[in-house]
Picture 1 (cartoon, rainbow, N blue to C red):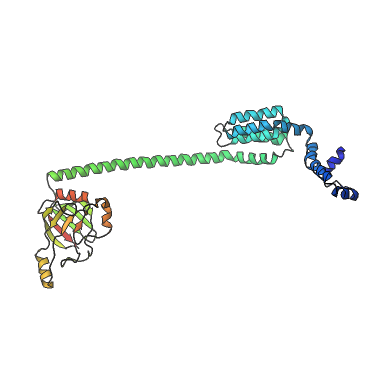
Picture 2: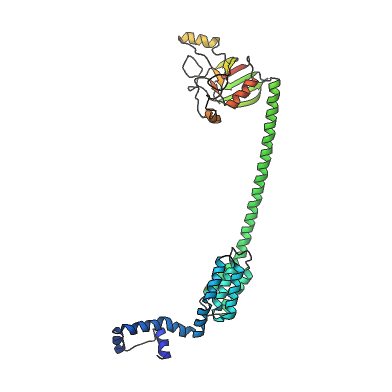
Length: 337
């Protein structure tokens, strides 16, 4: 087997076998396999040089070890292995340098060094002009030259985000402190009111679903309420599910009602009774300000999402406890449309 002939097989465009040879070749499968091996395996060896091929085989275990160390996060140890490859197997230095450049610029490498990374890629281009890693090295150089600007932008944005987070946290602390002050003031006001009652009227506005505790015309506290199932208009007769409208007083209270604590309102007054007589109906009665039905206190504020009573005024259990303490019997109750 002659050297020039093998070289020409590798360069298939220059190889022109005779027709007789081709005919013979088709009938000899073993020779075809042999020529394939020569063209695909042996020829690249001759083109690249036997020394380069041998060094590549000899360096393979060290490359595998370096790659394993990289995957394990041992970046410096991996770099050391690649440096050993460069010293011992210089013909494979382009690959080792390229791998080192990757490690030096790897984001998870806490000791990454973009300048050293650039140096590795530049050396591949300078010292190995025919290297298959040349183009990738050029791409990496372009990328790394833009990394510091991107890193600076990211750092600036992260700083801005952290500043905003600190501002929000400061506001949250400030809001929490103010809320605590409000709660303390409310407790002080109502503690004082319990010892020296200030409430002279309960005002109920059906339209806005509000109950207000007032003293000398000043509103001390407001509660959200639920009304009767047919809330529009004044109560006229028993069973119409309407909440009365007019002026009444708290004339009694029931601490054992089916609803958590109840304050009875003096409905019907004389005007309500006259209207019912004119209509020939019973005016009804038993109108209360009360809490939520026993066993359902967990509903809480959500009870105000609908008008659910039979004509009474409903608040939460905690709220009726407050009203009960602040509004003694005889407190005026004004129910407005």
